[in-house]
Length: 166
Image (cartoon, rainbow, N blue to C red; front, side, top):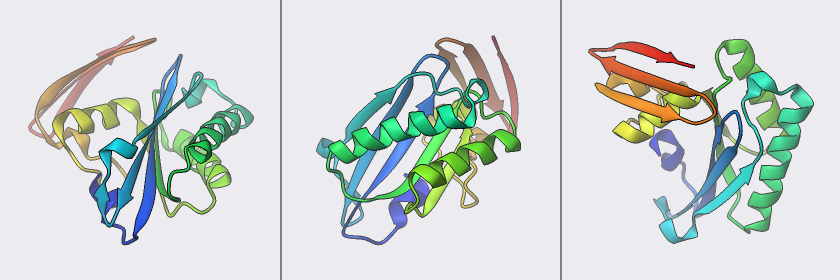
């Protein structure tokens, strides 16, 4: 939600993507008159989406598969795409993600990228995304455990974070 939901339009969609070491899951949220319509949510999936393990062509192929599935769902036009990957460890990786999203979804106005633990933390603790596109997830105290192909534990308290995994 956050800034994604405040765009004016009669009907539009937002695609959120979580890219892990084994699977990538996307959820399309449909908004009509600024309100999310829960029974119109669409789930899409693809293979590994850890961008640190994929070259540019593989990232684009993954996004193209998701784009085909989104189009097949006949959702309203996409206005925003967020891609949070276990491989989005630095700005160079985020630049690659943004470029691939822009190439695959050229009409999308808002693109947000980051680490999957950031988006998971934000979702778990109800934190909205920041205006600059970064998820300000760790502004709320809490502990998050992610167990998948890789595992991570993130603890946030008083604005600081501690993270470990493997």
